[in-house]
Length: 171
Length: 131
Image (cartoon, rainbow over all chains, first blue to last red; front, top):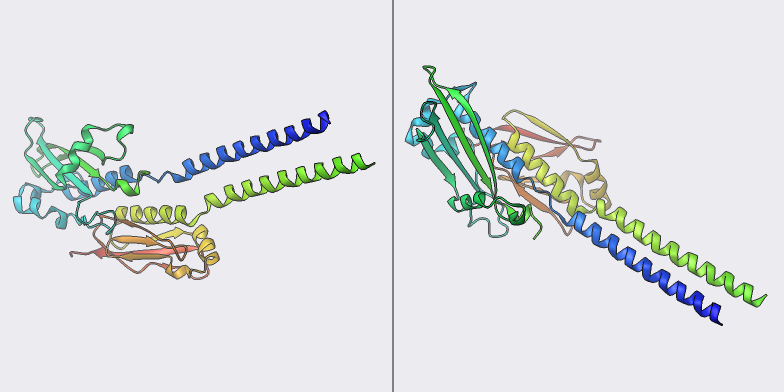
């Protein structure tokens, strides 16, 4: 009798272990596949590349960038479209932002050109760049040197910010 | 003799239950990786990033063999899997789902189409929209 009840106890114990193992595997799979692919950093880098191509062609600065009208119509001039899908209330809140600063090489404090487009509210996210706050917008910075028509040297700094948190970070 | 028979049946039931349990677990794991929701997200984001990086008159060719297999299994025509409306890519691999992701490159994109008898999709960038 003792041996039979012992066997039953082992069976119950065995199935409890199986259920625990199964639960663990299901939880791990859920965590692994539940994470969304965060492509915002790549998206931000691509945006910087596209903006760079508009500002400097073959290493020579596009002189139009000094004109206010060119800066105001930069989205059109640089073939950028900030419209997004009509989900998560995105239509009412811009999901993109970029900032361009052009410095003359002998004055790296006061930019000769400084303008931006997109949602200014996203800038605050860059100051809290931490893994704990990954739901905030993603900031990417890029800089490069370029020369003007008369060989003057410029430093160009571009900051791009992509939000789209709902589709890149697990809620 | 009776005791031996009981032990045999108990053991067989025990082994069968274990096998059922392991089979369910393996099937669950195998299905997770090829789920429509995951593939839709992957492809929508991949296509959007490809278009963002593209320049006019480029032709993008993307291997979508996984998507084709799943779409056919779910009764979706492979020609209808990828759609681009304005600057939003939508990938649909089952009747109840679909995933959209936008791109910022303001280009005119032809209607995406699959290569005949192949698993690849073709996306043509015609030019910039405001030109």
